[in-house]
Length: 373
Image 1: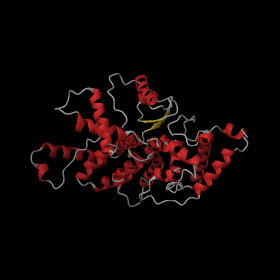
Image 2: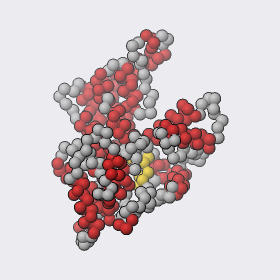
Image 3: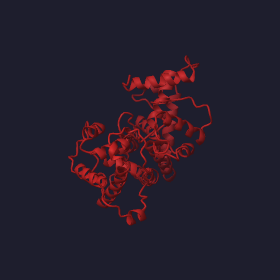
Image 4: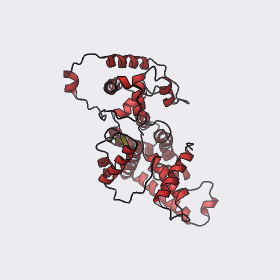
């Protein structure tokens, strides 16, 4: 956590952009090129229009779950009755005296900020196996996108394909599971796939353990991704000043925000630039990188790998540093702020602190929790 400030003004795009620019200027970061990961709130979208906006992956997946679950209940009366009955049962047990303490498992009503956690907690507590099995895979996938102390951007593409595979209807699926999968899969494509950009694909490629894109079943799709990634990485490499390869990552670098398969075909087809030294170096590094042994994911540290190999891949390592610092999700920082303030700082006994004091304590506590102090 760098800052958690009191925000007395209205949460308009203009006011939010002003605060963002003040913090970026304080850190000597570009007001144009610096990526900002936020949810899809219209005020945040407008506030980051001049920057490289990245959709929060966890907010997108939560939207998928929320929309698809409601659609599944609307299309299947039995599932809707199941959901209503579960809520009614849990509510009754929580309100009745003495019943909860006599049960072997505590019945939970949910109430989490993430809908899948609420649903999973409720259905798990009343042992509805079919729904629990369907929701059980989310926890590990969310963790891959929410880590605060390691890169996460490279994980979104394989997370999407993992969900895509999980939600393929199988013969052995129950009727309820088939209904859920039929509703969830189209929403997954509409809401999550459309948020995936070349930033995510390039970051995935720059993870040696994911570089081969084996999670993409279609060979044609894989080859198409590789072509797009190569062109994107080369455009970044050409914008690096070869005389300053050791430049710090926070220095301003001019590069266009990646967009999903939006390449100017006229430019690529009509421009016939001569092969330069940077082209040769990039192609040489790329071939070496592709031939690298794929490391095992267990205990693999992506940042350590690039640190150890930066002399072998000077261009790719700089690009990797620039991409891998981008967060895939903003939900972790939001949750840390809420949890720390609600549970440890602002309490009924300590409710008169100045905003500056709350910010100072929050930042120190966050640093302590992450072993930074």
